[in-house]
Amino acid sequence: MSRITVEPTGLSPTSYALRDGDDRWSVRFDRRVVIVSMLLGLVLIAVFLASLAVGDYQIGPADVVRTLFGSPPDPLADFIVNGRRLPRVLVAFLVGGALGASGAVFQSLSRNPLGSPDVIGFTSGASAGAVFVILVAGGTMAQVAAGAVLGGLATAIAVYLLAYKRGVQGFRLILVGIAAGAMLTSAVSYMLMRAELIQAAGAQVWLTGSLNTRAWDHVVAVAIGVVLVVPALLALSRPMRMIEMGDDAATGLGVSAERTRLGMLIAATILAAISVAAAGPISFIALSAPHLARRLTRAPGAAVGAAALMGAALLGVSDLVAQWVLPTPLPVGVVTVCVGGLYLVWLLAREGRRNHV
Figure 1 (tube, rainbow, N blue to C red):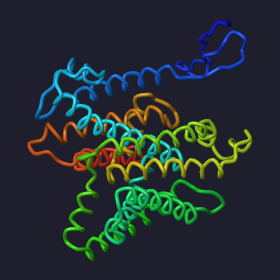
Figure 2: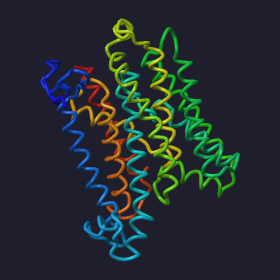
Figure 3: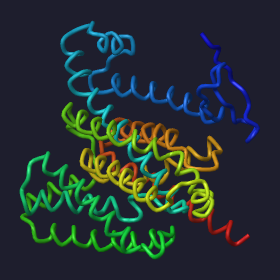
């Protein structure tokens, strides 16, 4: 049996390679990214246990763990943990992770810190598709989810084609996406205005973005989508790093820049659309999670895995705040909009000072 060794690569002080003694395979990793990811994993465990323990019916951490392993202290604890709170926190983690990964890919594609799916209109496309199914077609929850995915994909394809001019440039993608998002938001407002009052109220609640009443069918739907899309995204991560060096460099290394971009765009759009279908349009997680992950890892490019963990942690904490910290329970989308809006103002002011200097 060959021995596995860890050696520095020399590319950076924190870059290492894991390889077997016979040199049949090797994996390069960044030590700082691994440490940050492990710390985020510990944060997720803490948020997970707190989400299952805190509520009108308090359950101690030890009883939560016993309940998860099939030995609940009483039937009520089993119902509350496994039937009510566990699906909600799993949907929060899956949706937050999908939004974080999607935002990291869009920011890498556009090479712009504002390049997230909710800023450049793809989330608006998914919302418009879902609202159309709710108000015009009167569809079921499954049909609403399908409408969200189709609306997001149709918007992504339209924006890609409109932004294409001898390749897709980041600023063109953002400008076309913002314009498309504005038009789709107007379309949603028009549908709400023309709808019956009860239907419009229901659609407006859905548009706020909420994890209330999420159950195991939502968990299964989001998990299937994430499991299908994330491997494709990971397969594109290596060519994605080459594209970040420039199209000419990527082409010289044998990577088709436009084909890789299109694949990344479709995968990231599906992740964003799945999130919208499961919990409504939850804003600013896709924008802020990749930023915070990059600042912690100091990675030069898109750290998709760390961004996904950060997105899951942000949405999990936001849901705890929305439920139990504020005087009145609110939909989690309200909390992410308030916190994310402040973060966006800070980001714009920081970028303005940097450009001024």
